[in-house]
Structures are given as structure tokens and as C-alpha cells.
Length: 354
Picture 1: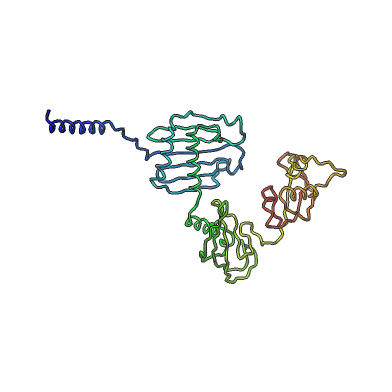
Picture 2: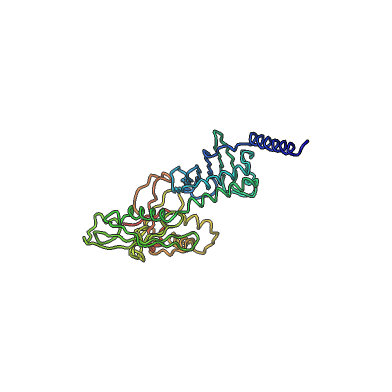
């Protein structure tokens, strides 16, 4: 056979192989409609963090934190680029998510109170959910890799950019008592991101009030005078951590910095107070049994390093129906504390006097 003919046959064979390869090439499924849900729940967490859920779609990622009663307490959302979305979906395909079982809970035998997580991939009309106990050590390596990518996505979603930080700060100021009462002309001054963990975002604004004073002054006699204010807002983890006006007024707590606050606590029948529970579990033995006032003072200085003053147990001279957990006792407690330290007491049921 002549050489040109051999070359021609070889060329035809190459073309034929290429055509066959083109015809047999597997087309990748369309995953642009994929929806990924990562929901974790249970375990020992604060009631306001009972349910946490990440939802990833083609255009954005949304992370929601809900309380035990179903009310949303925090919500974050970030737009996703096509590359970011594809990278998240690719982790599922690379680790063959569809091959995993429906449930992995071996970790319960080794670690307690960490709760469960549901990982769900819905794409092209098919849905796959894998429930895992929140301990990576006892999970298949592929699931650990998927969880790491989802946790990375949560961190990204919760990290606010400068515009989101400003929007959060301005919305908070405009809804706070001082500005709501008579504020106007809110003006941004500067923004500093502090090198700390967690990151602290500190913003300064100015605004004008038409009356003297701070907070909601409804029903109070105040001088009608144009007053310039400066407010320093600190945001941590997407929430306002502190807000101080003119360096002297705590807008979150509604008190003058450095002032004292009188608080009241009304116990209920058949319920033990936090300091009573603390004392019963202390194992201490006394020659003379401490008074309620002494136990209360010791509890707050030991547990919270808070010094309370003027502690009193006062009989109110009221009737009670003896209904447990409903009726109040015939007495209540009162004390004085530095206003900047009162939040733990308010969280335990104390109320401001007056």
C-alpha cells in the first residue's frame, strides 16, 4: 500500500475516534437549581439559639437563628457569585453525597449535649437528607468535608460588609429611645474595625435633639433647646453590643454611666431563687445560718463579681392564694447596684425600681 493511502486511512481513523468520543461524552447534570439546607438543633444551647439554619441557593446564602418558640432572633444574608455557589455544590458531588446513609449518630455514645444537624441537597426534583450527630470525629471523611464547607459558608454569611454594618447601626439608632423621641439629622462620622476576636466594628455618628436629656422623655419637663449629640456604636457578631451618647449615656441600658440603679425581685411560691439554688449546692456548713440578704450578696459577688448594696428583704403585707409558680410570695427583695453591672440581674428577673 502506498504511503499517502496509509496516511489517509490513519486520518480517517483519528476523525472517527474523535466523533465516537464526542458522541459518548457524558453531559454533566444541571445543578443551577440546587438548594442546600444545613439545619442544626438540640443540644445544650441558649433558648434564643435553639434552631440555626443555613439555606444556599443559586443567588444567595441565608443564615437564620430562631428561639425555641420559633421566633427568629437573628438573620443574615449574603449574595453569592456563580463561582461561590458552584464551589459549594461541587463539594457535595466530589464527596458523593448521595452515597451516604440517612443517619449517623454514633457520637452520642461518646459526647453529650451537642445536638444534631440535617444536611439536605435538593436538585433536579430529587432530595437527599443526611442527619448527623454534631461530632465530626465519628463521621465519614466526606461528610466532614461537606460540613466544613457549610461552616465556612455560615462564617461568610455572618460577616457583614461596611455598608451592612452602617445600615445596621443607623437603623438601631433611629429606633432607639433618644433619637425616636426628638432626634434628627443623623450623620456618619467614621468607622473603625478593631483587630479583636470576635471582630468589633466601632462607628461614630452625630445627630441633633430638640430637647435636653436622653432617652424617652415623654411626661417629663425638659428644656426645649437644640442639642448636638455624638453616639458611639459598637457592633459584634451582627448585633449592637454597646451604644454610648456623649460619653455619658448608655443608650442600650438607658442609664447614666457611673450611676446606681435600684432593683426589685419578686419571688413566686414554690420557686427557688437563683441564690437559693446556689447556696443549697455550695456544701457550706455554718455555725450561724446566713440571712437571705447575706446569701444574695455572696451569690452575686461570687458568680458575677458584682457588688450589690442596700440588700433588703421586705414583707409586703399582701394575701396569697398559695398557687405554686403563679402567686407571688408575701415578700420581695430590693438592692442597689452599679447601673453598668445590672444586666445579669435583669436577666434573672430583677426589675428596675421606679
